[in-house]
Amino acid sequence: MTVRTPLIAGNWKMHKTVAEAEDFIQALLPRVSTADGVDVAICPPFTALAAMVDSTRGSRVQVFAQNMHQSASGAFTGEVSSAMLNELDVQGVVLGHSERREYFGETDRALALKVPAALEAGLAPILCVGETEAEREAGDTERKLRHQVQEGLAKLAPGQLAAVAIAYEPIWAIGTGKVAQPEQAQEAAAFIRALIAGRDGEQAQQARILYGGSVKPENARELLELPDVDGALVGGASLDAQDFAAIVGAVS
Image (cartoon, rainbow, N blue to C red; front, side):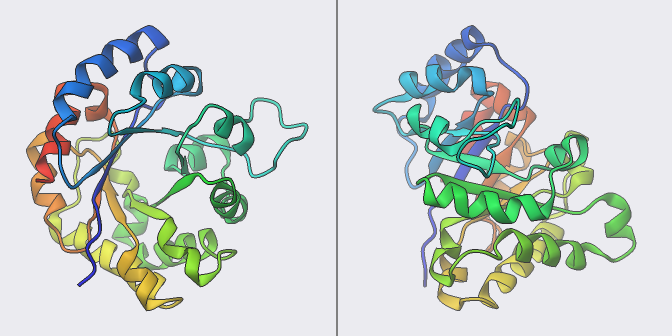
């Protein structure tokens, strides 16, 4: 049986100045220093990346960016390239978060280019997928997930598939306090794994599938015990060091 190391990643979104980030990381590091059998990452805003990389050196905490452009360079005002992230020693990047899709026009076509660009640069991608409440009520969850997963992974060779963590984030549960029922989360995660298996069965067993959407210390253990859920992409609860550490601790 394939053993997948869980990943707990905290997406700070547009929160925390550098000073606030430094306060947070000093509170977090001792709380997760003895956590075993789990990978831990924080995803600060661009302005705090360099400071967080410096402050986490030698620790178990990795630093991921919240976005990157698919091109190596160019006339793309306001964007950041993989080379810029590499220069800071950032280790990974979140791609296709629903807020990027909804508010900034992120498309599956762009993500099909961003995912391989991240891998080529040595960055670990977290590809976000998920349905709206209207799509779930209309029975379109699997159709939406199939399109997003297949498009996002389309340009990868089969042997690269397991290098991408896929975060299932039902849009109706992000920042709303609503959480997918365990059976809903498991069903979606298993479906995503089956989609990957359609390309390569061995890679599907190695791929990490995360759950995101109002994950808190109170519900983390139940979600993380699901057979096809290999971690969490945490939003609001990742802004508090004690809460985030408690979610990390729920793995063990």
